[in-house]
Length: 364
Image (tube, rainbow, N blue to C red; front, side):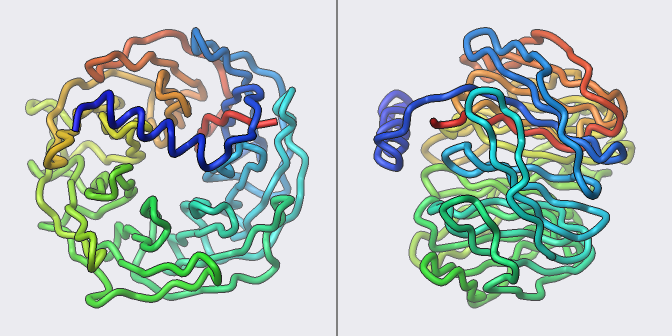
């Protein structure tokens, strides 16, 4: 299938999901862990320019950020208190208004809404579990999770296939990916058989993302020190929903000591053409092209970036990539070129301990 046909299918599916939605403004949000704040930047879609507009005070340390599919609600994990929060996003200004805060578990490291927007799934790094909270039409989280399952040591990422039938939870401590069936009507997770796949060597899969075709999953591997460091590709069986590791690639220059590096965020462009992986230590973002026939990765670039790039985000239109420098307190902007290379645009101040970043288009 040609890339043009694939992109047309993606656009069509997005329109079917929300045909009546009117496009609002575009924003980038950055969590400042130590200061207990979330910074709002207004994003100029054509140029990718960021303009700081709002600062929101939080009741605890904001860590990971994610948004509802329509961009109207921002979900936040509070790392220190183990809580989850939801905020209404003002479509015109990006101002955040608190909806509610609920209890979760120790160190909620990652959270993501399901494809319907009616559930929020969270992985807990210390509690070693995954939970599902229901989300009502106003973005309010259920006080109690409808599902809470123990998984393994250091749960750190969650991915959901586009059919909303399967969920995958990556673990840095257990070196495995847990696999679940998902009932979108009830929010219940059911372990598959076998319930997990172990990563090759000691890779410690950190974050996991699904290709929009559902044929492949990709992980950033936190462990360093070997050629297996960087990213891995897993093939997904359409019938059993099981994952099988098929490829691992290096995210660093061959001359760099991998023991001095730890990967972090990994994300695909919306059309699934390119995968990007953050290198903490080398302080760069590695880019890979995705073979649309077999899912295999080919490295196309390594781009220097801010100090300790724990988190980055890709704009919903796939045109720009933004990196939050945890140690630098700045956000670096890049244009994503047609070959997957990143073109540096600008750097703006965000604040100390810039922990997580997410780009959001708000539908009015």
